[in-house]
Amino acid sequence: MELFLLTMLLLHFVGLSALLGVGVAQLRQRDARLLRIMFPAAIVQLLTGVGLVFGNMRLGNGVNDDKIMFKMGIAVLVLLLTGYLAFKAKKSETGADVPADGMPVVFGITLIAVLANTAIAVYWN
Ligand code: HEM
Image (tube, rainbow, N blue to C red; front, side, top):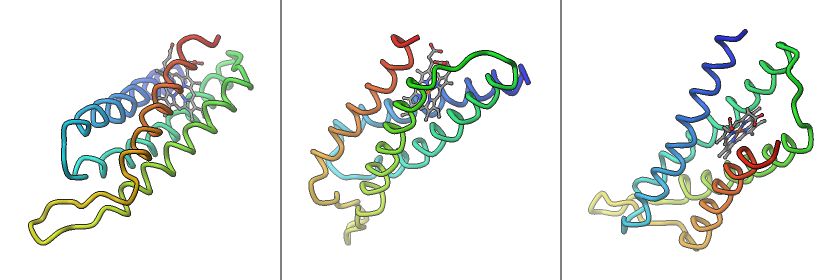
């Protein structure tokens, strides 16, 4: 169970770096190509988050229910927003991805939500 928990934490960091790293790279990108990577990363965050809660409970480590509920809510929001961005982007004739309507706003909220969940994870004990 210990190994499972550590593996979940490792994958949780992989998901976080994919969300934040791709998000920052997308700031410099005109088309929406990179946004497609953020959706699977959001799925990884949710699944590994649930895995972390499960593993901690099995090991008898307490989990903070309020914190987990907040993180879960924000993670679902991130999943919906990245899903919107990934599935609404269209391929143009040149092969570039044309962004979805309102992309800068939706993308901005997504980045803020990811940062908020990171801050909650770190500061709220
Ligand atoms: C965008 C989504 C998420 C981000 C950016 C995020 C970020 C993080 C980070 C940076 C850590 C390491 C903090 C530390 O060990 O001090 C962490 C740990 C953890 N996360 Fe997440 N997380 C997300 C979603 C979730 C979800 C949905 C859950 C639960 C369903 C969850 C549950 C946990 C748990 C149990 C830990 C272990 C340490 C602790 O209790 O804080 N996370 N998360």
